[in-house]
Length: 477
Image 1 (cartoon, rainbow, N blue to C red):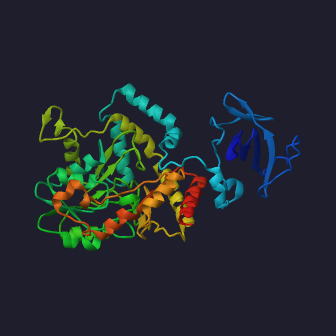
Image 2 (spheres, rainbow, N blue to C red):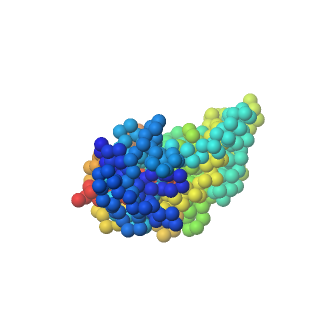
Image 3 (cartoon, rainbow, N blue to C red):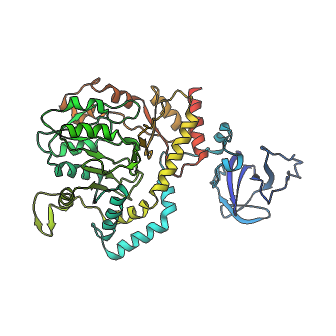
């Protein structure tokens, strides 16, 4: 039988062990109840101790109903898979080995797949809260908007430091309505970035306007404010920058240009819930800010969802009318509107998750700091957090010219990763009519060729982080 190392959970003790041919070697951190050193007497096996301060002993494995028991350990240990290759683990190794366990150790410990995103882990931790919230919505039959959405709107507006929040069925819909509320229409131009998810430019196209792209800053991936002013024409009606990957763009620099030319700024904050610019939470700097609650976002629904956030009473009222078929009174329609309402179930889910967002953000920041520490000195270009920004690390995107090879190597070694984004917007087929060609926005194009997103989420353990790093380093050996 193949040997595998893992962490065991035995009652309140978390232990590191090796399963090998029906025997389990259990190591545990010394506490006021240390384990004795015990070898396998029948095989005259010597006592072993892989690390000072860790005691160990070998014991035969007992199986019962697909579970593992140890002699003299009456409590359930853990489940194991059919091939007995890996046991689930509940404890990070730094609690056993100290702050810096040896990197090569993780190749044996973490042989299982490291997901790019582990939503099931998040849901498991919230299941009781979510079940109760969804049951309440079901009992109340408040499926379209309703009290759960209204309460979330109130709470999220306060979270963003804004006066109003209108819940939408997606961030795309919120962006669409934001431009309508500002009066952007056929033949107008809106300045934005070519390096983002396509929904940003969809909103511009939906209202009949033309997206005018401005290249990005090489370090932050965000729009380069120094290039905005030269893109302004008499047809320009708004500026729509994106807080990309969880990091705020340079708000003051963009706002100064907008004020000079009397242009409204719409913040696309769909990836940056709770991010801060110069210590202030984003969401109320521009005339309107828009958010997405797609399930993979830092604050994600269990389906689709979005928000329109503003301090302007008129914009808020029009947004709420447009999302509900252009109606402020049932069956009376003041203008052509849309079915963009947030579902009650999503309002309930988001109400639960919002309470945990700050904690999740802190965990994402922990993961980002650890990556930055461990990947320093590698050939990768690491993410840069601007001095004015406090990123919420929706993504941790590294860069390298051999991105595609690195991606395959990570995946072959059971490490999930993703590309955000492989083709900048100006080179997408949908925007061929704009007449752009390769080389028009070289910084965005270079980023598209080189960027690779590593796993980052609150539940990512230090063991998993170190395994990701070790695989990356192995690629460059």
